[in-house]
Length: 209
Image (cartoon, rainbow, N blue to C red; front, side, top):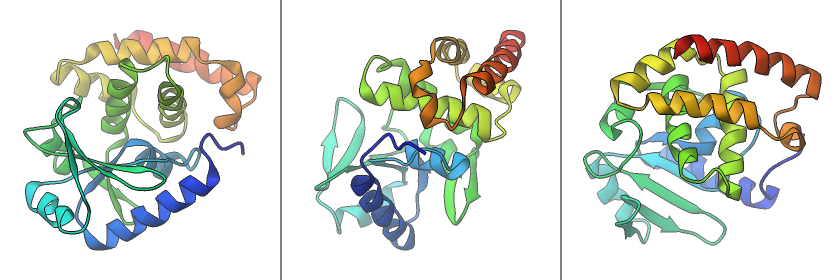
């Protein structure tokens, strides 16, 4: 399967993620969480949600920078970044405290959001950067989750409505409708298979709104 990011970078990122998982407690979000659900595209940066005691532990190991604009902390490594999100500070589509608790599950030894919660987070990220390279990767991750994770669009709509993000469900329909055929190689789909899935999920999304 065609890889979106450079394999040297994703290999180093995955090794660091495994190391982090042995040392710290966190909820994994972003591209690596999507990968655990779909086994499609690997990630470059590592995105985690932690509580404040874990932030203090991370500060003892890494040089962290506070990103006031994006409401997160960052550890900038040679090939990739570790992005750290916190309850009461970070601005995500779902409260960070709920990602640590209410909307969490486990896959392969990692604590991750439920498929619907992760899909909502990814839609929130994509909303501001669809025209960028990261936005293209977001779209791939979003449809990968939709097609391969077993995510329930009805549950997604309910969570989105509870937190004031029903527009994200509409965005899901837009991403599905406008997905570029040249990017199908990242989803391991041909045009016929994709067209069938697109018709199916377009109707499900329409009925949920």
